[in-house]
Image (cartoon, rainbow, N blue to C red; front, side, top):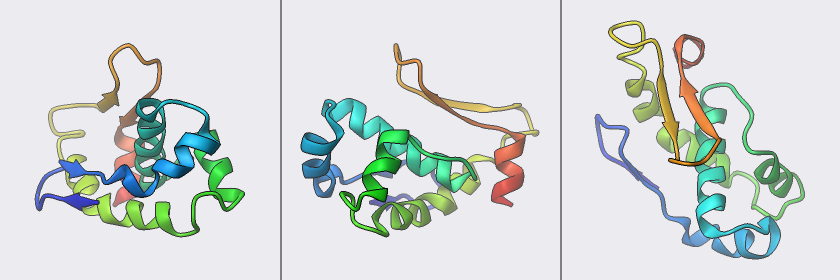
Length: 114
């Protein structure tokens, strides 16, 4: 995973997670990718991730530390993405169009990050 300095733009390399998603997750690549992104952002802001991803990690299907490393990689950019909260916006919503799931960055997540 690579992040651009000063930006929340991130390039996720899902190739390393693909074998786990195909067999264990039981969903398509798009849903699995979103679940992984949601888990990473939620953990970085003090929340819990997608239940299926959490279960795969607990069972050892996803190697220990992989998601934690991804959380650490996005933390600096995610912290910067909170700059606008309470300075022009109350929250930032990250979602997939047509999907009921979303991640909300708000005052509580900003407080956790700082």
